[in-house]
Length: 111
Image (cartoon, rainbow, N blue to C red; front, side, top):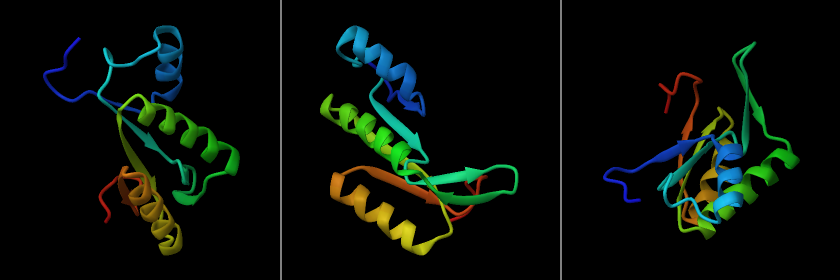
């Protein structure tokens, strides 16, 4: 299947992983993946941000590495007001050649 436009799956990691296991490819369903909160977390009850657990972070990174191995572009969407965490995310994404957007608001209307 060819895509006339980019097809970016946002946070559909469970679906994409299952599809890849069954089909040994994902070319016919997507061109890229976007994963939210690989490094950060959101507490929706009190509208605050935190740091992702190591277990969850490793799970997401393994998934994104698998997508990269299938020649898919990787996008990260992170939420933080912590300058140190922001730099860590930026550095990691740059090292990997991944695209990243970091917002300081849940509504994505921040920086």
